[in-house]
Image (cartoon, rainbow, N blue to C red):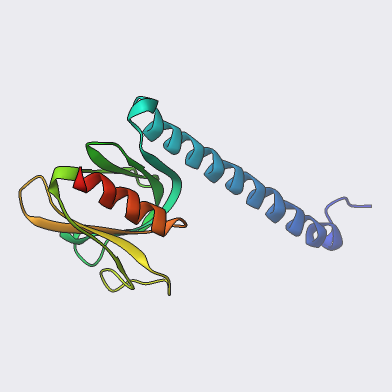
Length: 152
């Protein structure tokens, strides 16, 4: 009797796919945790006003319409709004002094998810007008805490 006959092979495929899915899921979860911790540990805990471990980034206007969206972590301090995209890794640090407007929009750079996005308009490091947008689970809280810290 041959061990790897057609029936064994057919039964083995779903098991291998399940193992592969499990490994991919664990790897992604580990990467999320590592990147969120990396952002969080860059700041003293007394300086962190607000933090979201997982947000969906819709892009930065200065990078153009064709760019990678992605998930990442978002953090607010008294001085800056800091976003760290997980893969590929990208940091966006926006000084609160440079933020001109915070608003909710339905789409950004032609992309939408049928939910409101939080759009932040700011002057970038070159002094040019720029903007970025995120899909956040706690939209109202983020909008309010950013606006409150802009007024101070």
